[in-house]
Length: 110
Image (cartoon, rainbow, N blue to C red; front, side, top):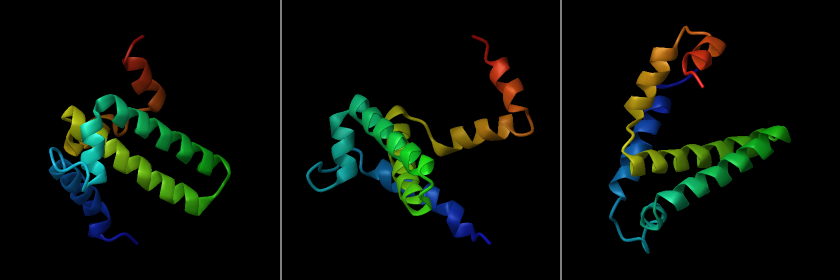
């Protein structure tokens, strides 16, 4: 069973990440990512995505959990860098709720 705090951890994580913008890059890994810029943040997100795919493909549950956490963290860094708030994404997911994935994809056009 899930506790409300399981969901709130995402909001807390995003708040911490956002607070690191402009912080000392030598004292904070997150601040260091921001200092490197959007392209490097996106590159790191891609690396984490590949690591998550590899762990999942291997069927390694524990490694998939760890890599998924890394993936979410780096996704949130990219969101903060590009001005995307978690609520923006949650609203988009809510908009799609109840819609067939095929139907939703086709509605985007080419």
